[in-house]
Length: 354
DNA sequence: AAGCCGGGGTT
DNA sequence: AACCCAGGCTT
Image (tube, rainbow, N blue to C red):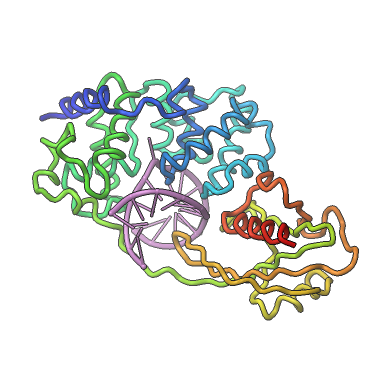
């Protein structure tokens, strides 16, 4: 079987078994494919679908996105993770609006100039939306190719990655690039899965070295693992007389960049003095909530929540240092990290009971 | 070359 | 609990 057979087998399989009803496959414009590809970075299809539908409804085209505030974009991204994707998406929309007359560029080089678009995302956009001939290399394609060649090393290794790009390029057909690109992703997502792959249903099993070894699950080799450090923080959930809660915007870089969160202090025992010194407010009744654990890719965070009421009528619309008093009802008007949203919902439940 | 950046699903 | 997912950017 040569390279041409690979793509032809894959395309024939796609015609019968490929996915053709995903939301971004209906009216697949470059803009709509772009939004979907950014959302799908490191995020599974089932998770993305409701976010994508809300997003497209609010921002049906590039001008709508370019004219929006970054806060609103982050608000629609709440819970999806990797929030830099949303900031770069918005930033790229503004660049296109100002320098490309509102039209997304149609070459890989120009697309890759835009923030958030790398080689794989750019290639996928042009192949899926415009049928251009570019390879992609996402997690699905890596797994399929690693098994085809029975490559022993972890695919994150640059040397292996270079080899995979090379192979992905030589396997491309001359026509039907959109279908082929969708096909190889679908194969990885539905047949050539990480665990228990369905090799009997695979259209390219004859050339698959891992299948011939009867041990496909041995590939790809898992990422070398390291222990996750544990960090702790104490979050101050401060309420005023109107039942509003104090939020502050996080720095633009770092974890949860640009999102809204609670003020933090080192520990629960230091909450009252910290609040007095930093904010100039004495605390009323203080309530220590049980801590909650949040797992990130590269560390674990232990959050100790402290709920307290602020005494007196002190309330300005905008407090210093980018803090705001936030009404509980419109929970999704700003970007909120998942554990913050969880705490706000818990708070709302409790205040209903009072 | 390695680390940073989330949240949810699967095993 | 470990691992992965339609990756890109920074150092």
